[in-house]
Length: 456
Image (cartoon, rainbow, N blue to C red):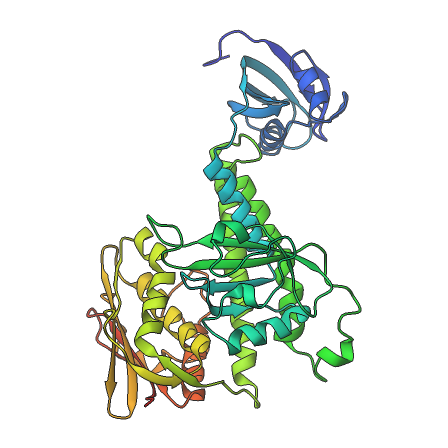
């Protein structure tokens, strides 16, 4: 065996990828992996290359890894098809067999996996300020509808004021570590819930706020609420399909992240990359579903916002805080309005934040690495304005009139965008009595201006 030295074991498979003969130590590993002899190859990495060699009719040689109890097995294998493509089995030669203790994931890796899974299966997510006050909240679970309404009507209120924590007897302020993983009782919901708090900001965790996730301990009861009480007379994508699709897609993402991070055991790099692609595709699909749901909401004849007095500059600073990690990953510097800048405006806080997150997120995506994205906020007469300025390629003159069209993606391809973000953002701005406009020249970046009615 070239590159492997002495042959330690030989084996054979048939045309159905069943292991029909095997020497030790492969025979023992086959059984410990849950397979039989004869039986389908039970070592995943070996099965994959056996199938590839048989289908292509080509000899394949490489190192494989497999879990064997508390040990990791590494071996060099050569797979030699014994017939024409797909018509026969394969001869297997094994060399360089070695075992090492299975690596224990670090505390950081374990925590990252826990958060990734909770984020994927959570039925409520919210952004909190550094004092755990509610900034935005989103949920499609029918038994959380009343909770969401209360949170949205009282922005800035600690999230713990809206739920019961039966295992804790504490007073504000509550340190976030005490409520991370706490059992929650939500008024109006028959299900139990567990809270996950993800601290944002470095080097002091929580300095940029928190992400709150609520994970249910059981599926929604089929009888809650009665279908006639919660479904409209005509089919509704947002109300019917979004909750149905979110959970299975979220679980696909969570499982793919588990595989990608190798926390379930060693895995060749190519399979880890496959899992990363699956997770990314799942995230794109989930984003598209959320956009389509938002589209249905803003195009409804009875759509209304809940305007209140807000500080537009403060909302801009919060948007920058939320997107800070994403910007740093691309080497982009975000420059929000200064802390002393105050711009009173009239608008619905969470909708204004949604618009600015979309504008700043687009700017990060379009700007070259190392660029600067500035957010300016000011009062001009009776209007409050927030301007997002990027150093990206700009928008060609022949496309600028189509920027806010439905499904317009500005020529992007393959990035998973739906082309609905700017359309939805403008609809939201106009629903609040304002507008969203753009000024750009090709090669000179873009300036997106959000206008809202001012406030005294």
